[in-house]
Amino acid sequence: PTRPRPKIILVLGGPGSGKGTQSLKIAERYGFEYISVGELLRKKIHNTSSNRKWSLIAKIITTGELAPQETTITEIKQKLMQIPDEEGIVIDGFPRDVAQALSFEDQICTPDLVVFLACSNQRLKERLLKRAEQQGRPDDNLKATQRRLINFKQNAVPLVKYFQEKGLIITFDADRDEEEVFYDIRMALDNKLF
Ligand code: UP5
Ligand code: MG
Image (spheres, rainbow, N blue to C red):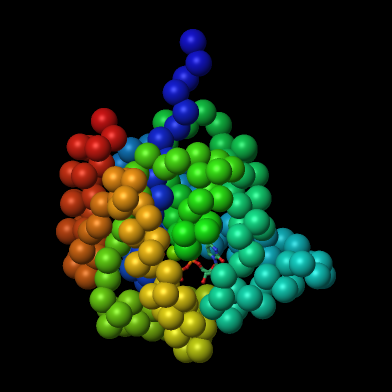
């Protein structure tokens, strides 16, 4: 008998909303595979030297803009093909807008659930600033952070609405402590997925 396809959970939210943090918790709790799309792109840039296409994408990301959607989807597809038979896959940080959501559904599948981490602008800024001091990603500078916040704000409402109309999205108050947020996510996932 063929196994059912893995459950696909998308985790969305602003820069610093806790996508990475909560996605890893979900992956660990349920034994799911974890994909960070931002990380996928950053690794590809790191491993691809002197290639025109990827130097351009590096520039785009460093300024806080979005990589071309076809490139991103191709990377996601490749990554998904490498994943063995998993029960579930958590995808962190994709799609970024409605056009990307449509392409994902067209070219990959309809997600089983979308987790949206709603976080105030103030909190997003605080967290990114703190992380910038500790690690410093190339796009954690002030200018790029502002750009990431603006892009997110522009795209978030239509994107959330899109998944709402399909009855696929659950919104969580992500201003709270990590553990409090995860408790609610866990309750929702237990309820919706199993
Ligand atoms: N933290 C987390 N949760 C907390 C909590 N509840 N209370 C207090 N602190 C909390 O968290 C951020 C920081 O806050 C950490 O220090 C954490 O400890 C703390 P994190 O879990 O890292 O948040 P996350 O939402 O993952 O923030 P991140 O900065 O990764 O979000 P971005 O959306 O900016 O980054 P991403 O890697 O997804 O994308 C980067 C860039 O890649 C994009 O800007 C874009 O240029 C490009 N990209 C695309 O073009 N297309 C894509 O599809 C994806 C990415
Ligand atoms: Mg992240």
